[in-house]
Amino acid sequence: MPADINRIKEILQSVTTDIQSKTPTRVFVSVPRNDLIRTVNILVSELGVQHLSTITALDAGTVFEVLYHFLVNGTEITIRTSCPKDDPSVESIINIFPGAVLYEREIHDILGIVPNGHPDLRRLVLPEDWVGGYPLRKDWKPPEGKE
Amino acid sequence: MARVKLPIGPQHPALKEPENFTITLDGERVVDVDIRIGYTHRGIEKLMESRTYTQNLYLVERICGICSYAHVVNFTQNVESVLGVQIPKRAEYIRTLVLELERLHSHFLWLGVAGHEIGFDTLFMYTWQDREVVQDLLELISGNRVNYAMNAIGGVRRDLSDDHRKKVLEGMDYLEKRTAYDKEVAINEKTILARAENVGILKPKIALKYSAVGPTVRASGVTMDIRKDDPYASYAEIPFDVITTDTCDVLGRIVVRVLEVFESIKIIRYLMEHLPAGDVVMKVPRKIPVGESISHTEAPRGEDIHYLRANGTERPDRYKVRTPTMANLPAIAEMLKGSYLADVPIVIAAIDPCMGCMDRVLLLKEGSETPGDIIPWDRLRAYGIKWYAERGWKI
Image 1 (cartoon, rainbow over the protein chains, first blue to last red):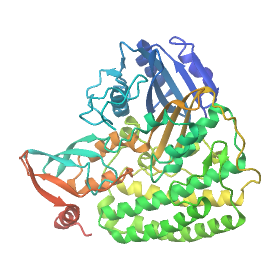
Image 2 (image 1 turned 90 degrees about the horizontal axis):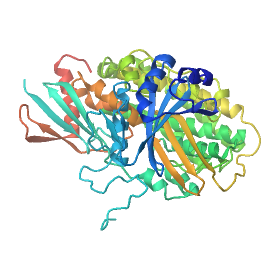
Image 3 (image 1 turned 30 degrees about the vertical axis):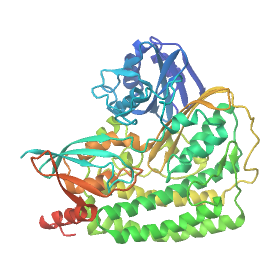
């Protein structure tokens, strides 16, 4: 039973009206990064969202986009937010979803997006001695002299 | 007693994939676990940005050597979703068949590994023998034992003949008989009960808190299965049950997987008896438009989710993969806390991590911060078995 798109629009109307859904089980909600925590809290309290599928981050040219994928009743609700390239940071959601701990470390590791309030930002997938920058940024070039 | 830090991995026989668990011990009890991953990071997401969609079809298959097909199905579903095409029904049925055969081989493989981890190698031999039947069927259908290369964007690359269907059904009859025996073993065999009951406890609240997935959460009584929650391929029209148990321990994770084998057999029989006629592949536009898509499947280990951002060129702008093991890692730390050191291998194995091989453990002597003896894997395993025997556990 997919989540009701009208219900999602209703509970989030105080935050955003940019809510899109092409198929019943995929909903994309765009919010400014300052409203991220508020939006996640509303989804938890009003829709009973319990499962964070993952966090995707990407270089969208002028900004970094961060997408939080939540699964509720078979519907994948994605909260899309963005941060400027000269201030690549978002609020950490691990106080609400402790399962985000590795996903936030990953976006920090590969794109340099800082989840504010995350207690442990060690590298996750890249080697500990990596000095080659953030590989998933579009302006990234492989370090010279190495294959 | 002084606390001891014990590094397990990245190269360790209990792990089928290089990961590092730094385990803090108080005597024999695990009090804390720190996990370090990335030892097999191959930069596939980055690589995909510089390859065409057709090349990526074969690259995603190589993310995993066991549940490779779940990744391919996610990738093709994502591309088809951006294209806005609906593939032929017969192709969906064939994809579902290969997905379920993959689950069978993965669960048999895991059951054997679980037996091996607790020193019960007979079970390992039995289940891996049965797994060969599945591998033969996969080879018959796709030409490959692993990395089946079955999918095309818009369908599948090979059709099923009547002979294939007959052989698949015969295989299911054999496997059903064999698994009935495995089930008896899993539920009644003293060796398994002694090592798996009340070990690696994961309460439903904690499982949900850490967003764990797959048989790991289903063994904690959480009904979560993407095949039912958000049906893909042809799962919406197939009758099957989601298996859960409420024991929250390693035994529960064994029982869930054994019973899931029966469900997979049921699904495969249904597919073979109701296989629709028609094409197995359709022509799709060569140009992938601008768009984005999320696809998730219930891989043998749990929810496998992919995200595609297409920018209208022949290469994806961003492709993100989150495998089920990644989702289960934070929960593993919770399962290990309070466990005995001797149970660490089976508790880690119980989430069915996609793993590699290891040679030895570094043992830090109690109260010391310098590496002490190096214990080979078989001695560590013998130690685990002896440790239980000394405490009066009949194994």
